[in-house]
Image 1 (cartoon, one colour):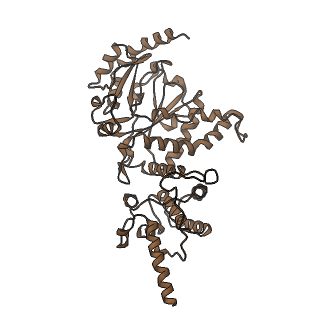
Image 2 (cartoon, rainbow, N blue to C red; image 1 turned 30 degrees about the vertical axis):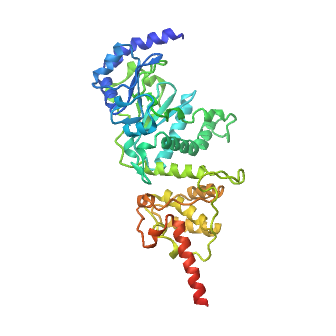
Image 3 (cartoon, helix red, strand yellow; image 1 turned 180 degrees about the horizontal axis):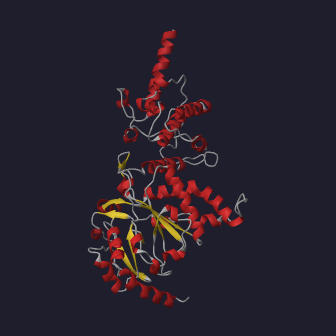
Length: 432
């Protein structure tokens, strides 16, 4: 099929399709606080741009627009954006960002495999509200609205950490689902009894595309047409994924009464655990395997674990004591803290693991033993690192109840060292 035929086909559709009030309304509603940009088959229009009225959609179509794209970043006023702005200037204009994953491969079935594995991971982290849409070609877009993310983490404004934090979350998700994706693609490629896939490129082709996680990058708006396929970027429910077929995105068969929002009404902060888990994972992942590289970069490069003697639970700071009683929320973050604290003070491996599993029994509900085992194995492949400093991290867990010593230290490890030293001195004096 030559390009001219494709172009003629999409242009024949645009006036008929975009003239529908329901389509104009859904595009206009989604564009709020976003930078938008029309595409004129092969080239994009001017930037920045925005819709002031829903009729603006059709006015651009009459000028030749074939599809509409928008930013994942949310702006106080998109028209204030200027090319060449510094990150600081962009931060001052950015009010937030949606987290968007672009899943794309040569085969729609591979994209479905990746999408379903990501949904399982999101469910594991308590993210229940997200948007799914067909990309218009052979992939899917998944969105977690800005509302779902914490507005600050350890005193850092989340809105200022674009694209760094979305990239970390995307890498975290990619790493966590990759083995499951390979397994499921194996079933599709070699049959249900196969144990591995011979061509690992098949799994790599459906890893989420990092290109979308960059400043001012645009993605196709929901219910926009796709130039090359003439299909609709159709919004789907999770239960529609398996049965979805490309013909379902035929614009001439679209039921206007079934149009739905791409951005659901998320609960405030429901993606907090996902973000903090990804940041913790990145923190661990940034430290090289000492067997492969003895030179560890960063502020922990010269850090050596302390070997304390006669460590008692009474020597832990109030925040750690509170965590050890069991927690309702933030169990994964708490596990990260405990592992790094215990390793940093030189706790014996067997004692450490026993203490971790005993702590987990007090949680309601408890973490899966498999998850704890994975985190322990991951930690022991790397040099010890300090737990989070005594700032907003422990306040976020709801365990920060400082005593007089807390005002003199910056990290839970410092607290344990002081208490342990004082305790050992007291024991020597009593023996003397």
